[in-house]
Image 1 (cartoon, rainbow, N blue to C red):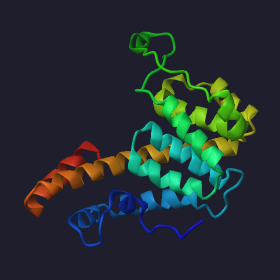
Image 2 (image 1 turned 30 degrees about the horizontal axis):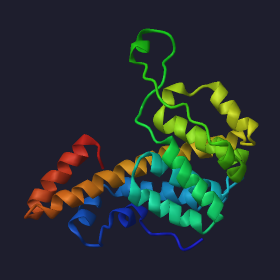
Image 3 (image 1 turned 120 degrees about the vertical axis):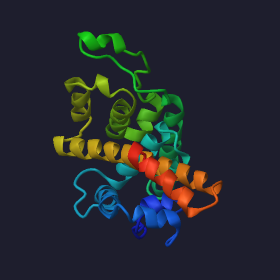
Length: 221
C-alpha cells in the first residue's frame, strides 16, 4: 500500500494547512489525533490478523456507498482497486446500488417500542456476486448493511452467519469496529464539507467561527 496520509479527514475534506478550518480543527487536538489513530489502526494495522486489506477496503467502500458519501466512497474504492480484481470492484459497486435504502429501520423486540417498527430491505448479496466475492466477504457486506441501516435487527443469528462464513470472534470485533469508525468518519467529513460550503458564502473569519461553533454544539464535527 502507499504511504499513510497524515490526516485522512483533512484529505477527504480538502483542508489546507494554515486555513481557517485547519486552525479550528486544532481547537480539538485530541479528537483530531484519535480519529487519525483509529484510521491507521484499522487500515494500516501493525498486526492485521486474519482480516485482509482487501476485506477492509471492500467493506469501507460499501459502507461509504450506503451512506451516499461520494468523496469517502471514491477514496476507499480507489484503494480497493489497487488490491482487488476488476470483477470484485464491479461487484461491490453493483451491491451498493442494489442495497441502498433509507434507514434506520427494523423491528424491536416485542414490547412498547414495537410501535416504532419500520419495514425495510432484508439485504443479501446476489448469488452471482457471492460467487465473485466469496462467502466470507459476502457475509461481511451483509453484516455491514445490518449495522448501518437496521441495527435494531442485530441478533445472535446474524453473528452466527459471520461465524459460518469463516469469521472468528476476533475478526467480527474488527469488522464491527471498522463499520463503527466509518460511520463516525463519514459524519465528520460530511459536516466539515458543509462548513466549507458555508464558509464559501461568508465574508469574514468571524462568521466562520460562529458557524463552526454551532456545528461543534450540534455534534456535527
